[in-house]
Image 1 (spheres, one colour):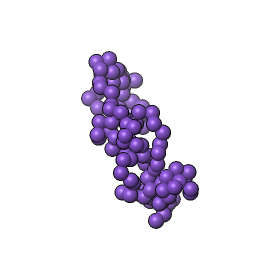
Image 2 (image 1 turned 180 degrees about the vertical axis):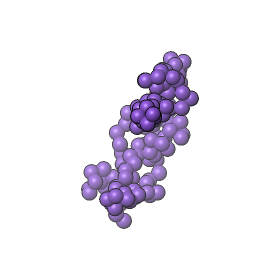
Image 3 (image 1 turned 90 degrees about the vertical axis):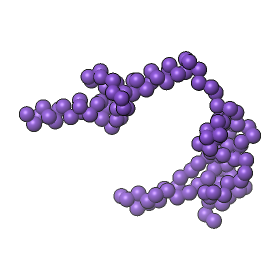
Length: 128
């Protein structure tokens, strides 16, 4: 197997292929689905696999997922009213256009940097 290195001689840390990680280890997403967090512990092992082929370069990148011990994980901190206000303020800033100052019900695309209406305005002004 290409990515099977349980001693960590080749990759520096124990490495496993997909679906062959030992019991008692979990990724961040798996921890979160169980209501846990890594709690500051270091990465214990990793899972490596080949990603999808890039259509331009025709290369399959190596993807990684880091594993943490379940027994050292701690419960997720509860959402406090102050944290809820901070998250709401952050999301409001992501939904507010910096040019027209309108708050939208969706997050403004970072590729545009402003709402689609403001992004299209220069092209419509040039066409007129």
